[in-house]
Length: 82
Image (cartoon, rainbow, N blue to C red; front, top):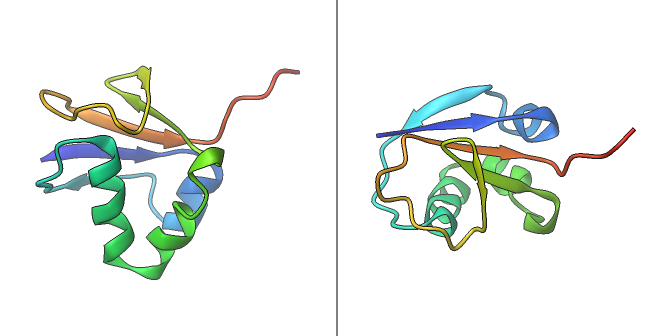
């Protein structure tokens, strides 16, 4: 099991702030594919990966990062300065 956390518009599209996911994925990209296969709302949320950033245990990573040992994966839009 891994905790999956969604922020900002990703959370709005998925409809949940977080959930626990049983996964056989070995990478973030694999987890995203499993989520996309669940329901249309996940397909919509992950339709443009250039607009989503990923963190494993609060460390920014690329989508090809391995999931091994991670307790939490977070998905969020890029941060903008102000």
